Length: 313
Image (tube, rainbow, N blue to C red; front, side):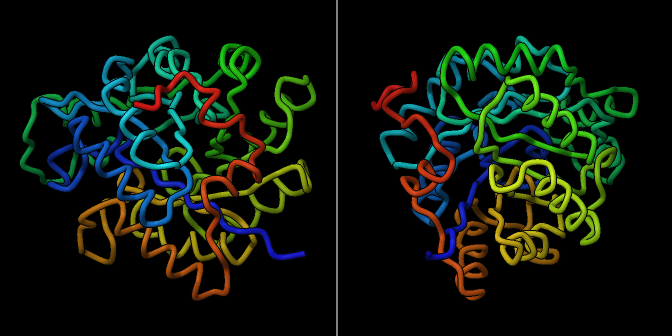
């Protein structure tokens, strides 16, 4: 049997980095759309989507803004559209799930536990802030908890998974989040295959160390065995080394300006496509192959783009 191909996910803009941090961060619907399609053309099979206020760059979960992006992305490429249910810092769960509820995508992210999602160190760096919202948005995480209770998990899974046939990118920031996913499995809330996304380097979650990656991979394999598809990413400068390790472990990978603004040490990445192209080269130089969107749909047992609420034009 041929080795399993590697799925590249690209997280196009996210809700952590702010416009003052990089001139290359996609902000407007046109910029997000173009950047997503370019990433797909470079080899991304999955596009993890957030949107922003086109005037200020502030993260938003307004379905009307998603409606300016998702149909054009679907028309422009065949990549799997993955809508965030994490949203932005400080949003209610109702705000967070509104776009995914509206568009019933093939795939949606699902944060698997509450934790101290801390970005306040970014607010303390010397920066010429372009917008008044940026520094307070980052700084308030010193006093905040990012909530993802069992009740929230059940609610999101019920409204998206059970009702709409959406599958999930299970985002795990700590070992305990794997246990939370295992509870969902035991309760019959979700079915395999499980796309487990290990996330490293967010302050308040797991540090980006090789030891942590190996431990999370081993525990996920112990809990879910061959019913799991493992993927990971690390924020900042550990991005590419971690993705190379995931590839060697037989896992999938995620890149994008949501996770790192840099392409190499001290050099800002000019596009999402640049990051996709780099990890594609690494995968292929390690002897692997990347999955096409259709191959990724088969690996993840997705329902297909034609069964979503995202219009084709």
